[in-house]
Image (tube, rainbow, N blue to C red; front, side, top):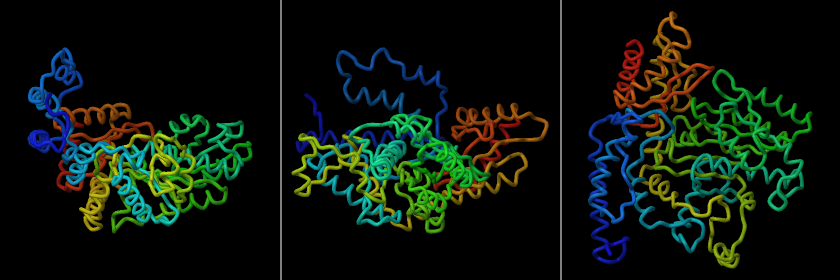
Length: 486
């Protein structure tokens, strides 16, 4: 039998090195130009990848399968490191984090129990400690855990907030007894443009969409605190029970930052938990110039941090941090085959005690390696450059009468709309903006985002890549204008 794994065997090590070298060369060879995409339409891609079977009677062997991969897959993958790629909160991966991914995949640690991941467990604990300090928490009380992404980080925070509130203020243990009639009256408050994981989490938690109260935003796309106060007071009068406020630190489309200081004050007035969904905006803390924009994070009871967004690390890599780590007790349940109590008494840390997942990847390694590789100065330059690129794009669009910009960016997203002259209807302009985005993808290898604001189709640049230059942004603005009138 051919080698199955990397082992101490000399032949196995030789084959491992061969496969990785071949793969690295093929991947680098796929970067033939600065284009983000080679152009095939959905129908064309279906034809490219169609096969009679992906499970042949007899294996084809590595060489034949690798040739198929080079032919069908690599040329058609999105090249996220391209300066032509800027549609979503999904960017390139820093080189050292790609190396970390190789280590993670090869050793295949599972982060649920210490005996499955000894040094990996200690690295995650150490990394969480430093992250809590970075975001202004008291490390003697705070704690956190890595998750699969922002949605799971948010869901973890919402669940812990619910259980904390029910235990402390309703004298009721949801963990033991499930939801009761009072729980149906629980209400959380979040921006009307917050992430959909708020509704999804409340559905999964058994509270339903009705428990999610959407708060209007102002002209800067920030949560309207006066409206929030009114909604809370109205719910109290109606017999409902406010338990949680979610402040968004970097809304998905606009990158707007809710006023955390004011939200914190309101949360304390009503004995509510304050969660910060900073999946996007958590990276701003690294900018020496702009970190004050997220200084309110230290006031929050929990924070969602995504490293596969502004931090430019491979998917997946996220964490949820708690100001008071004891709230993780809501997730702890002991199993003799996994997290035995006697092991923990002897100093063995089993991270499953504070995770919604059992099996987890060693994603903390990417953060541990990259933070040390780049240092504060390197990270500050990466984040500051992206934010200032957004400010520049906003300025050139605002000064061009052919465009309307929705709001001034606080982080690195710019939402705008080609509007041309006044002779075109709103519907016509919607179709023009849609056409521009599709044409950019399939004819120019450039990928930008599309969304809706005030009922009208808009285009979006999400500028995570610090390699983007002002000249590139000038060129893309003119190309969009040219495509719009063609």
